[in-house]
Image (cartoon, rainbow, N blue to C red; front, side, top):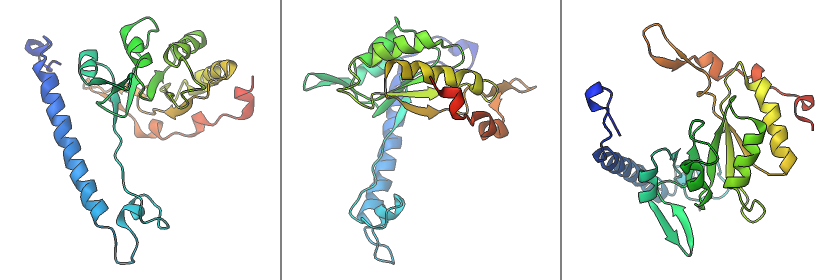
Length: 222
């Protein structure tokens, strides 16, 4: 929406159009590559190339599919790409969208939007979220979990120093209302720090640290 320099801080809607065309060009390029892969059905061993790409050498008839995802941050952009199909609303900008940790207030527009589209939705969950807030978010976004399984993915972004403290509480909160969410880990957000030259970055050792995320059953039992 805006540039880096102070003179470019005024929101510019033309940037949304440029972003759309750039995304379209990128997706069309990937589709062309996948089309080539899918048409090249047989490799030297007589196994479908598409099946090999998916790790499945038994079913050479399977095709490689493309699924994209992004944060539903700029609502005018998302709204412009939302369509009504058979009485239901779908965000056609991506199969999967997510709500960030800074825009997940239950009474704000981003959550209202996520609750009214049929797409599967991710919600970032961080240290600042209480168990009560998480429960309210799930009940707001996922109004009929039995009829619409797989609607919500909770994307945890605690950071290496906080995951053991907060993740068990959030797991118990979800278990207490019986919602069968999909849990996903975001190891980059939450592990950020500022370098001496002012750049925001992550340390790869923290991103790949597994010891901090090993929880035994005593951590999550209700």
